[in-house]
Amino acid sequence: MKIKKAIIPAAGLGTRVLPASKAVPKEMLNIVDKPAIQYIVEEAVAAGIEDILIITNRGKGVIEDHFDHAYELEDKLKDNPSKKDIYEEVKAVANLANVYFIRQKVTKGLGHAVLCAKSFIGNEPFAVLYGDDVIITEPGQQTVTSQLCDAYEKYGCGTVGVNEVPRKDVSKYCSLDVSDIEGEDRIMRCHRIIEKPTEEQIMSCYSILGRVILPPETFELLEHYLTKIEDGQELFLTDAMNHLAGEGKLTAVDFIGNRYDMGNKLGIMKANCEVALSHPEIGADFKAYIKELAAKL
Image (cartoon, rainbow, N blue to C red):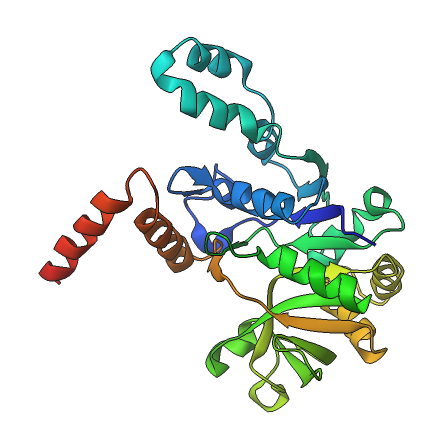
């Protein structure tokens, strides 16, 4: 079955990038001239996804506004011949896909955010693109979501996007027990996942980094694990994925792409610098500036 629906959890408070995220959702922080979440939506659309549900919470209505038409702005741009290109670009944002919104009314973790999308997804496989993670591929290269969709269609089971991270950083993410699949270069079997492992628990330096595709049975698993947590605890999406892994229903794709953590100050700066260097409008001037700046360091 083709993947046609996606969830983008964007309900986090953005505490790691305060005070910038006090009034502006971190998902709306820009990378050069587009908010981070637009890159994520565009990635999903490039993979053939048609319906996208963004999970938000209080104070994030500006995300909805961004993916809606701004008629007064569009009218002004339309009447200005010198603004034709930007007019088309602004108008296109509202037509990227069928974008829907729902609020996560209580903060209970990523698993709970995904569970909020149960009625939206129905009995279909779906992609989850984490709202903190912008992953950019080279022109002409498949997006990461496309890479995962191919793996799902080939093996018919859930798949997670992974890269190897420095061992010292594995404890921030998760560790996977994986094995090679004969004839595959970047797709592996995933047997077990440990969330935020201790040094002794690390099975490999492969960690899930912001992209997964899951079968509809994931919701039943999340509902089961929801009954096991106490008030104030988080529901981990990893628990459901680890269950699938234990049943032989999960693969891992060592994806090709440059990931930027937009919930991290350094990640935001890296994203802006690297995207600016290849930007068609300012790339050459910015590259010259970087060289000039570097010479002074």
